[in-house]
Image 1 (cartoon, rainbow, N blue to C red):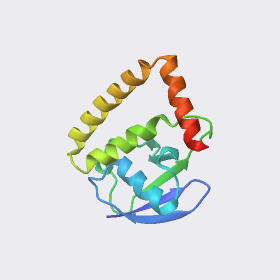
Image 2: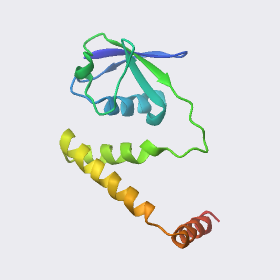
Image 3: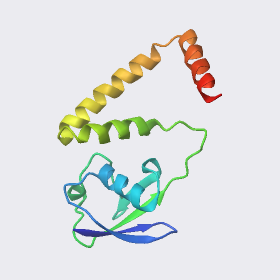
Image 4: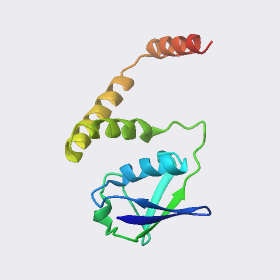
Length: 136
């Protein structure tokens, strides 16, 4: 089905999508086409914010629907918390169904947070030193 995307204070385009497509998958297509990073995209339809994990049909998106795309400004110094989550989901979705990919993704993120939180200051210093040496 063809939908229309209107970027707030910007361009408008049409895209061919499936009603079973997740909002995250739509964001990835928009990122490729309009060069707007996934983490800066926020879709709205009828005043509702669309959640990444929901499918387009959940929001009643059908042929000819117009989605509003708000582009968020991201502070370059701020870490992108959702980037790892998004990348993990995108990778897992190639091999697993949506519910399986989401479950594996959540478990991975929990494990990742647990591992990072268990790092000592010495570990962090060692990682930082290694990274600085790679940059030189």
